[in-house]
Structure formats: structure tokens, C-alpha cells
Amino acid sequence: MSSAPSGIDVAHEFRIAILSHGRDEFAMLHQTLGVAGHAIVAYASARSRRPGGCADEETRTRLSELLPVVPGDIDLLLPGNAMALTRALAGYAVDLLMSPSPGGCLRSC
Image 1 (cartoon, rainbow, N blue to C red):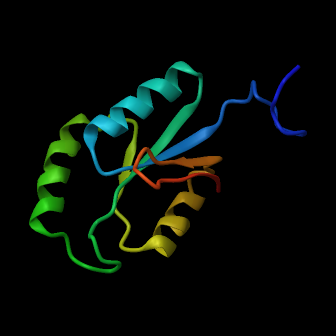
Image 2: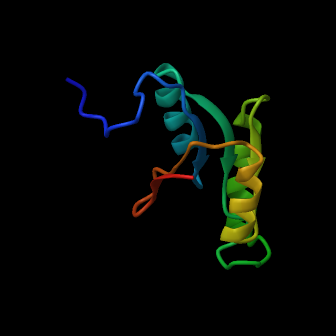
């Protein structure tokens, strides 16, 4: 018997966006979720440590390491705040937003 909540089809392919800061985290989740049969539709990362702020040196370095390894069929979103992320993800018809970060989220969008 399935342990899935009533009304959830566990055989369903979920459309997933990954929210992270590091290329290794993106790669790990992309690989794991892809093998499980889910569609990764977007990556998202904070543009700044402060909502609405400009990218600092650490962020620019992190992004320079990430950009070369983002798959060609995946969009990388760099929203300025949580509301901008919410609006951007609406266009991707995301089922789940996943984050491997400590205190990160796994939630329905």
C-alpha cells in the first residue's frame, strides 16, 4: 500500500524547480530527480544576500562557477526577491520547488 497522501499520484512526473546556491547541489538534485523520472524545468538562485540588492563579489564568483554547468535546456532565474521568484515560477507551471540548503524548502507551488 502506498504511503502517499490521498489524491497524489506518485507515478506522476513532477515539474520541479531547484533553488540553490552551489553548482554541486544543483547537479546532485538534477541527477537524483531526473533518474526518478521528474522534469527539471528551472534553476533559481539568489541574486543578492539582501532582497533587491546588487550581487556582491561572492555571488558573482558563485555564478561564474555555476553558469558553465547549467544544462542548455534549463533556465537560470536570478530573482531580486521572493515575490519575483514566485512570479517567475508561475510561467513554468512548477509542481515543486526544491532546495538542498540547510533550512531549505520542499513545498508545493
